[in-house]
Image 1: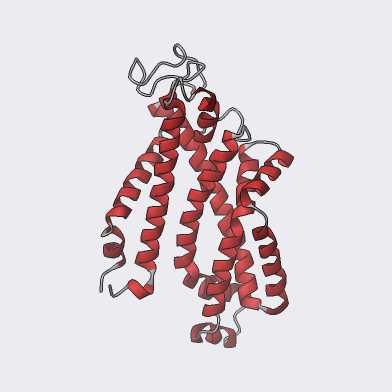
Image 2: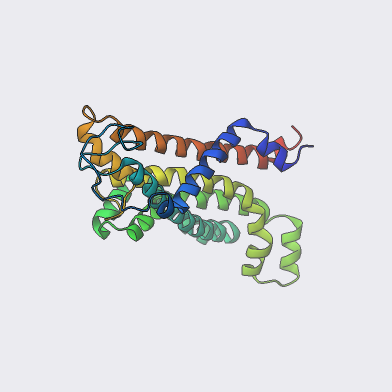
Length: 275
């Protein structure tokens, strides 16, 4: 039987995804060192093409596109990861309570989950940002608000499956509190699908953040990939690189996260353990 490491790292698509994710994470963490200048600073003539003094050229105001791309990685990833963590925490709580207690608690929480799922997620996030005003914190709140229902459903299904097992019944008979049983016995057995779903939510959060920034509802005074596309969309004919470069980076990042998520699903799936 292959180990988790063999199943996970034996997939060439996962290797590609991990390699690109590591590159983007390192760039985001070292953005101030790699590109110490302010990404909003005007450094040259507008619309300089890639290679003429600047690796990726300049935009309509004469800002360095490469510096914007580097600093944009930190903003986009930070908002995406934080919003995913909030969504996972809240969705896990809702799903765990609904799945463990069932009956009235399950009915109320699942109807609430279905209500949020019936609303188009991007439009809902758009309305929330318009109400709360654009900021990094409000972006995290808005994206997390539209992202938690899938987590709640996954956790609920896993908890309902685990709570009927012998070790959980033994803990109940031993007199352990419900909270202790959930934390120590039930939730650890739901980690596999939770990790997979959470990793895929990061990709969705990047797309939502980029779309909101594209529309001018991103974090103010902070460079992001979506903002760069939005600022360059009016000059696609004169300066194709303003939209193409950040667009390709978003595409590769989202693709890499999805590939790693699928690899995690294959490696953690017990049905494939003997493959």
